[in-house]
Length: 146
Image (tube, rainbow, N blue to C red; front, side, top):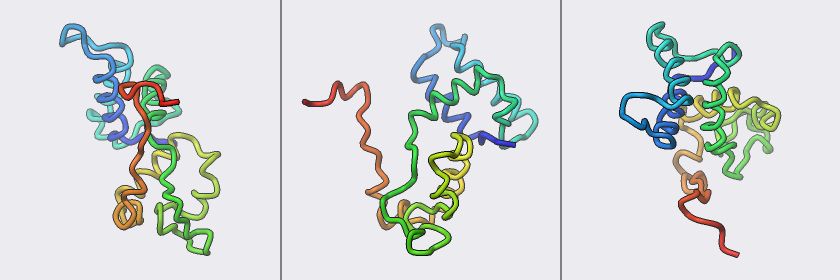
């Protein structure tokens, strides 16, 4: 089962709440409602993960839009797996995860992100945290300078 953790569902709900606020403070836009229904069932059943394969398509699509705004890779360009380490000191991924990253699904990538974040021993979380900062322009930044 490919699972989307409840914290990702919460983050996606908050993303959509900011992007499409409730017009009257009561009703929810379609994306927020789809995710909130999944979230409510997870809470009711005490589930930590929602099965991405059986998740309602509107909820998965809303989650995927949020996912596309997150950093793709935890890499900080200090890869110790190339030196023979089974676990990269820079990003915390296993050798297999580093090698297969381009072909991994968004759900598998988020599971890896969750594991390395909870572990937080990789250099991206301490020694070289400044390398992990995302400097992506946002719509509020305006068009890039020529």
